[in-house]
Length: 429
Image (cartoon, rainbow, N blue to C red; front, side):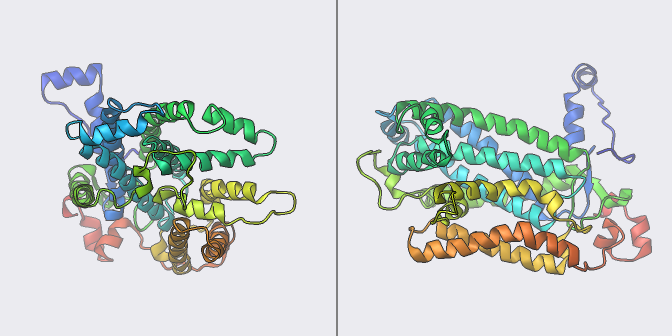
């Protein structure tokens, strides 16, 4: 994003001048996350979660690389190698818990980031590419998390791999060969464990690459803001540093307090006790369930219990589960309202909160046993989920009468005092 009033990078030290001439890395950082990057002055704490997601990714990469030094991707010793990390490696227990709970923290942060995008319509033009890359990042996260869940080679790891890869067998003609190709055999074993370990190690770096594209795409139109109004004048912005580096630092401190509370006082709160039992292909757990961050989509998968004409129920469930995420790709064109922010869209705002409750209900059902009552609730909730995006959202966009928008970001912050609006400076923010 280019503003005529943006601060220019002017190195003072001769060494920095030479470096800027030969390799302008300091200039790049200054323009990307420093005083050379103006951002809207009215960003609230919901905009902290992008930085927190980046921190979580770095946390996962660092802890994951260290854990990989001690892990053995062999079905005969994988479970024991995890116990070795927990018991014998210096601070191994903390690294393992930090990595496991870091995955949950990553998904919490990203889910909040996504629903912030839903509420403020961050997917609308000119930011469609930012949103599309974000959905790609989420899909890569899900693949990485699933493969990581298999690596401890406990009961839930083994049977989770068997159930999830078994979904591919629902694809006509190529399903069974595809499942065997993914596993390297007819059931999860050494070949599958080695493949999943390799991909689990590789994909976080792919995610990091897509995040760079995500941030690059963000810097072209600039950040959105709670009003949904584009920047019109210098007083609408403040430099990213020090205003938002300080704000993000405060948010990171709160995040670390909550994360460390879970890490040191309830590290197994979000895990499954069956995963502390070594994998046994001859003993099926009473209730096979994935990690909590997959539950809403797992509920959609299980909502299909009867064949639909010539389409088997299993295939319908698989298609619906993937479609629940793929529909997000089309949001920039499904939501045709000229107003972005949910603050000025009263009808849209009501349906947004209904959607949030619906996803929570799906999550609860996805983590519950496959009993009739939970399956029925899942079917109702899954139906509403797709209706929201495919029917309700386009319809609301057409019939809704938005509330009046402020003239500018500055007016939204300081009110309609013309003197305050015209004379405002970044320092006043």
